[in-house]
Length: 222
Image (tube, rainbow, N blue to C red; front, side, top):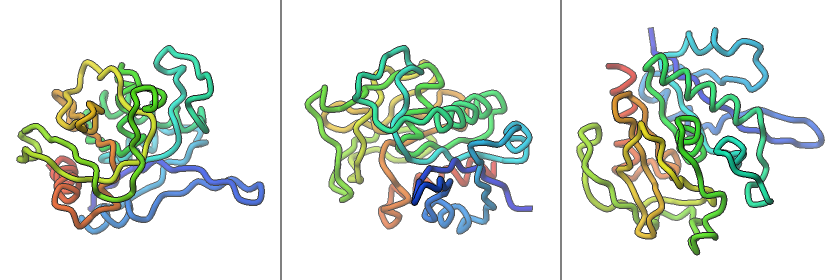
């Protein structure tokens, strides 16, 4: 039976109607690797039952993380926060750590995994005189060697976010940084959990994008 990947949704309100949805790029990358996928809705009364069904998880991109989760106040820098999105990401992160099931975080997913594992964020990169706002793959990231990925060097990726990791959660190692110091990739020290700040699902033709999803596939099927 194919492995089942639980994916977090994002929100869209049109004509007063709220919709929960998943970008089809995520689904495509996973189904091409033989996985089934399931959307984990925000208002389920019992997510634990759904989590138990899943073999692994993907926390996707989305809006800002509420700084209350890392003991800061929001003075207007963190935009469009949603407590339900934060809660579902927290539940999945804590469940994956407890169950030792694989977890991949993308963009916001990197941020929430870090926060709910004990780290913190910069609420706005402008505070660091930095801007990461390009859908083009022209954003250079230096990747350190890690046995999971078998790669070391400089890659070019897309980058559009304004929150970023400040303090890394104690259980994670940083293996990717931009030249300005921004943390772009983290890997758990002992568990099959890793996350990237960019969107590999968009630039699927790039070699390291394939490495990201191939590594996740290998961890799930292990």
